[in-house]
Image: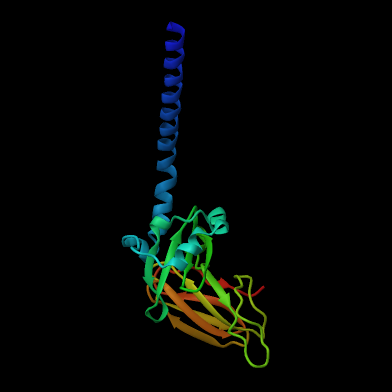
Length: 207
């Protein structure tokens, strides 16, 4: 009976040791990782406000998709709502050293570092036309061909007031930033420049 009691106490001691060890390890890692992520997210105006309340079901599906969770580790409880282009609701979704945005139909993701550099964006082709042009298809910052008409949607850090797109033929288009979000269209867009204080460096889209 004494042997059984000793075994029980030993198992209890090991359990407490494991729990204490886990708490200690978690506590020791938090100071080095959490402030960095918080500081980075705070560069986006939306994260200076409380998390969004009720979320659209499509957004929850977007965030909970296994591929999205595996690649970006999205935190649904920390999603922020912004007044995007045309006053429509857009959302920012933070993840593990990453950031995504959702515009009601789809969105894009990148690392926090790239997002702070103005590269949280998607490049879309316009809808198909009667002549059989290509349907809407998301691209990336790798660029577009000289014959492409595209729509670019993105989110930028606080301080950016407008975005200027420059085309291969020397043309340029400017779009205002609303709530950190913008939409700009043009043909053969090769680069984006940001206007405002403390803005990221221009982003080159051409291959």
